[in-house]
Image (cartoon, rainbow, N blue to C red; front, side):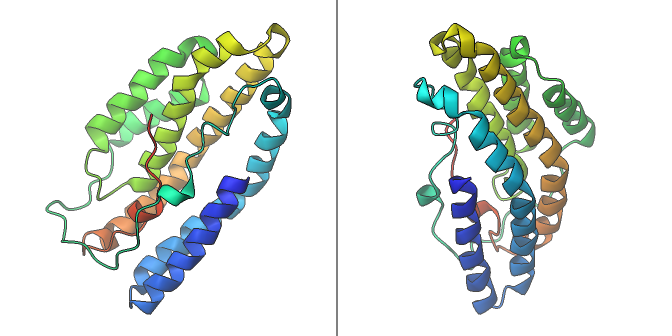
Amino acid sequence: MVHLKEAMKLNRERRELYRQDGNRDAAKIINKLLLLEKVMLPFSYSLDRSVKSLQQAGIGMWCDDLVSMDTVPDYQSNIPTPLNKYQEPNPVRLKKLTGMMKRYQVEDTNQLYQAIAEFIENDLSDHHYNCLTRHFLESAAKTLGATSARLGLAPSELKQELISVTRKLIKQLARSLRYAQNIDEKAGQVQERGVPVLCQEMPPIPW
């Protein structure tokens, strides 16, 4: 929950900067992001409570998954206009990937990680656009990438709990993709003008 509250604080500050620069369309995009973050707060609180025993056992659930907001790019009112126009990710592939995430079982970890990696590479390669969708998928990939090692470290009595909370997070990220895509699509019209809204509000995630 701390990470989400830090993100909301930064995004409120960014919203004011966009307004001061006359980028009111960008400020409206940040409003949509803040609304989504507000909706996600109760789920974030639930996740925090569900991993306390794992954290006490030395498993870095969420502490290692969440990237510091200190790494968010510096604010820029404008950048050079992107060469390409906004293009939505392939809806058929996105629907298939979302379904895989919703049905995720721990034995699917490597397959799902690879599917996410391929989708990012094929559909989200232009870093001027679809930055919220990419952020959620990178978050999922980072958690999946740590799952096998965590299962090896977890005490036997906590393995099922670890599996359960991992599935819970992946499914929630899957549910969030539809809202992320909606926000990304609206942001695309602003990003095409060289206003890097959303993309400069997302911390880079090593996954």
